Image (cartoon, one colour):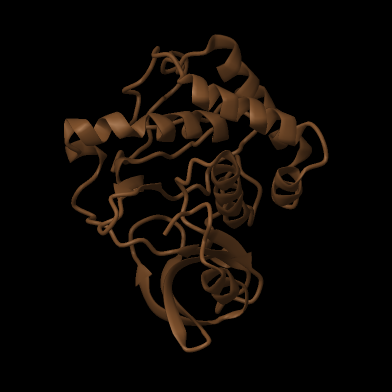
Amino acid sequence: MDAQFPPQNLQNAFQSGQIELQGQFTLGSNYTFLVAVTWQEQSHPAVYKPQKGEQPLWDFPENSLAGREVCAYHLSNFLGWNLVPFTLLRPDGPFGPGSLQQFIEYNPNYHYFNFKPEDKTRLALVVLFDHLINNADRKGSHVFFQKRTRHLYAIDHGLCFHAEDKLRTVIWDFAGQKIEETHQNDLLKMYDALTRPSALLADLQPYLTPAELAALIARGQSLLATGHYPQPPENRRAFPYPPL
């Protein structure tokens, strides 16, 4: 599925379909469930992350991670980068409001740390996206290729969009390299959309504070000003733990 143009039946299902719990993902600190979303006799696998299952954090507002997952989808979709599976917020999930994201079939044993060299070269856009959204937790298992199409996806964006510099990632392969001109143009498009009334701004405002939106704009401006992928910071930890 093209993440930019999810089929209408999938959108309808995620917005209004019946959600049935199928199982729980036990890795990770927050409660995450595999669910089946049924709409008009069609069932779609999805990942449900209820706000009630979010562990309190000292630096992120309480019950805000699900909304950040939704923001990552909207921004990826707007930019045309298609990295994040279709995601929305369901107010009536089995355990209350939470993010609902399309489940993508992939090989969990094939991840960043054992990607083939030719697959690692495809990660530049993920790196740029993480710098932009200030991803505080890009682990090696959070990027993968869909089994059938080999489309590149990135998941787990609850710890993103903080106003302070929080970037922690295992993918520093492109540090110092020039950002592609087409992607710089995408950043310009984002700047234009976030500095005036727009659909993108309307999508992000329910979940991010004015300070977080201003910081997102500033990060885009910084990437444009340098024209290069940043180097790892020297004054703080630049890698997540655990890395996988």
